[in-house]
Each structure stands twice: as structure tokens, then as C-alpha cells.
Image (tube, rainbow, N blue to C red):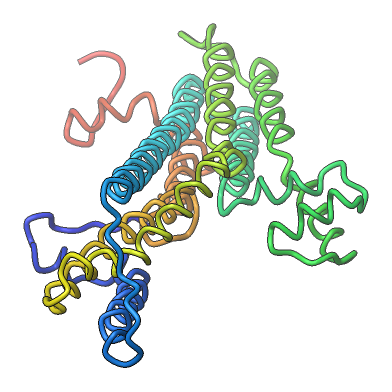
Length: 348
């Protein structure tokens, strides 16, 4: 869910745990504090000093870790807002498709026109249902592993990497889901409904280019869908993640030895520095991990379920059985509102 907060309330921003990285980063901070205490007290008990002066090489690694951390976070943040933009396109195009269909068929309140509007409404809602299901929680990446696979070794290997064990029942269930979640078939149903416009609705003023416009908006939704699906099927390359994560953990957990070498008689200052640096670097990494898939169910992810509910509500209001276009009042409603609730055609 998207967390709304007051940016001017510093205390709430710092100490609020809902959507915070604190619960996940604190164990790393405490672990590094314990490592620091252990290294500091080790010479007093066994006369072994494992602190070291990393010198220029350690400084260079620090810069490298900083680069990996910030560049990954920047890439992830850009992906987050890119996904938000595509979700906005889906919402806008769906609402405009339904609105244009309602507006340009409002002159015909007949049962045949109603049937066309209701069919368009149902096919459009199913299309959005299936599309937003596929982009959430890595469903697309999971289902892509079972499509066109017949229990091969490669298939089992992929499933194991998704955290799944081989199971005929599981594979059968996933294939059934894949068959039902045919987004392109749903999109073609929407286009087929649009193409039957002339068979159900009497032609009216301005409706000549309606089919082309509606088909264009349907294509824009499909385009946004395929751009959204890449967030679960095309993550940041693994080799970059592995390299950055390995350097980060190695650097963070050797930092106590380097800090105590330069502050041998200042344990409290060392503990404070270790805690702060661990919180900063590990915390930013955990933020990047949470935002890496902006369409999941983490606290700071985009609320696709809320977008789905809003889009379907708009479609229902515009094309439903009780909509103004179905009742033949859509074209007169602006005049009714402008004239205080009364509107009459004809003379004065």
C-alpha cells in the first residue's frame, strides 16, 4: 500500500514503524554492535588483535560500496515512478474508453445499444482484472515458467528457484491459472465488442470516428500492460545485484575492525559510528529491495488493487445498466445541471 504522511511532522516521520525500514535493519545494526564489542574485548582475554588499518584500499572499497548502493537505489526509484506512470496510463485510457463509448452512444437508449454498452463494460472489466492480476507479485514470472513446459529438468530448476517444489498438482494448478489469465484474449474481446458498434447502436453525430478512437485506447492499455509486466519478468541483472550485495556485506561486517583500529581507546564512539553506518548502508539496501518490485504487496508498493477498484468503479458508472447513457440522459445532463435541475428542449 502507498503510505501517506505529513512531511513536516519530523517525529512521526522518524519514529513511525508502519512502512519503516527500522524493524528489518535493526538486527543488522545490533549484530554489528556485538561484533564491535567482541573485537574490542578480544585482546583483553586472549591477547589477539584482529583490527586492521585498511588504508587506501579500504577507502577505495568504501567508495565502491557507496557507488553500488546509491546507483542501485537510484535505478529502483526510477523504476518505481516508471511503473506509477504506466498505471496512470491504464487508469486514464480505461476511463476515457468507457467515457467516449458512453458519450457517443448516449443518443440511443435502446435495448440493443444497452446490450453493447454492457458487453463492452464486462469485457473491459475482465481485461483489466486479468491484466492487473498478471503484473502483481511476480505472477507473470511464475506463470512464464510453466507455459510450454512439460516437467523438464530446466522447468524443475526454474520452479525451485521460485521457491517451489515439484508437484503434479501444483503444475496442473499453475497451467490452469495460465489458461484463464489470457490477457491478450481479453483484449481481443474488447476490440471485437468495439467493432460491433455499428450493429447495435444507431449512428449519431460525432460517432463516425468512435471505433478508431476506442481501438486506439484499447491498444494503449495493452501497450501499458506489456510495459508493466517487465517489472516482474525483467529484474535488475542478477550479476549486478550479487556484486553489490557481496561488497556491501563484506564491507559492513569488517567495518568494526577498521574503526576500532583508528579508535582503539574510544569504544563508545566506535559503537555509535558502527551503528550509524550500518543503519545507513544496510537500510538503503533494504529500501532498494522493497521498492525493486513496485507492484508487489509491501508497505511502500503501489496499490494495484486500489487502482483496479477505482477503474472498475468508473467503468460501471459510465457503462452500467443505471448509467446516464443507458437512461438516455447523458447528453441532457449538462444542461439540467446548468439550469438548476430543469431542462426542456424546444421553444422558450
